[in-house]
Image (cartoon, rainbow over all chains, first blue to last red; front, side, top):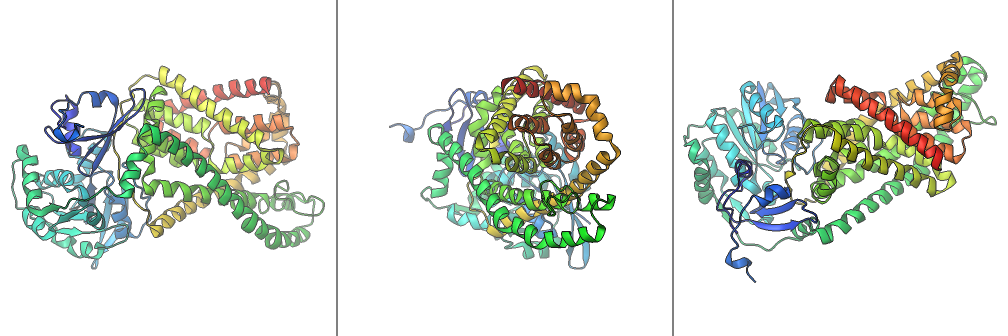
Length: 65
Length: 567
């Protein structure tokens, strides 16, 4: 997967080490628009649904069944 | 000389701090354990130095209050020890390079070095040192590996001669990483799988309930066992004979006797009812409360070090948002179950004023501390478990309803959760015990003087007739609204000093169990004890503190009155 967008959030994500064009894996989401947990390398990040929905991803080959 | 510890959140700065200074600052496995500057002293060879532990930050371009503090402190330090997470080197280097741009004398500690092995990361630290131009030392602060080397090399710290373009920082990092780090492919470890398992809704929610009930059971089991096998026998068999001799020496009936020993029940000391400073006053904190406090901190510290709490925060985030808070607020709440003071202090991990106000208020109203719980459970358990559940159920309901109301009415923002979830780590037993004992020491130091003072004051007020007087004054309120006898007001007065002593004062009053339930709930809610009160004042400021206190009193009147009608 690939991050292609996201507004003021980008710098916050960058500080944590997740940048445009990097691969991320979604570990989990919660019911009722709860937070989403993403993984990138050894980093796992929990972020709110609103923020997560502003990250656009492109599904990569290895995710397709 | 001033040395600063700077690093990303949850890289083990506090663990390094403890190793370097010999202090026992609380170390946990979640970002935001340290919320204020911690100072300590250390020796490098013969020279003394001041070491300052700075709350974790991802960068020096400040986004939050804590990061601003970190950036400001940099001007004060002579040397900066940059604690980096060797398992997340890329991200850590982002801060390291920013520190290099600031031209501060720098030394890098590559912490969690031991973990790089099972995460399949191999780092050439010599090469890294060359590329960064500052000393780099591999460490594992929790066990102490590499710490001596770190200390020896502090004098070598220097502003790096290496220059790079701040605009191209990530590019530079990528370049460095490519030259020093090799990653071997590996399978997910069991702990990692368990970690992901506990944040998925279908498996995580049941797990959260299991953890919750197991925790509750375990704390009761450890607490009761300790009381039954250790503290009660000690008091009964060793302390009582001593006290009886002292009682005979002082002569029953005198003022000094009443103060020190209290009343004898059938010629014997009854630690529940005697109410002397050296009998009840000592038994309450040491005999009845301490075992539970120990049990509570043992279990909580394990969960903290293991890394469960941030995952719990993810699981409860949706609920907490409905209450105007966010998932991380669960951590101060849990700490508040031990003692409200560290609970209120921990609300600093929340970002906005609104969240901090709601969390601090809710903790002081609806989160009973371990001392209070121990005495309430001890008092109510004689009539079976139903009453205990009524008390806990009521407080839980108050917690939900009140934070829901506050979440709607208090102005301000409740931002979305944005938090790194650390990996599960097997707690290091020695470190864990050290932390539990640091907390116990803190409890003993804080609690015993206030308990003794509470017992002393209760006795004085009774002797002077003050309690009877105020009792008559407030009788309409206490008797009509809460349905309690007028004497119960004594407990409410002493409750300001220590709530456990206050509940103890209810024992001789011979209350019915409906009254006991109401009194327990009212005592838990009506006002924080003096230690929490001063903490609230410091954290919220006088105006918000007064608002918070008004909410407490109003809520108590409503809930106490309702219970009196409903039960």
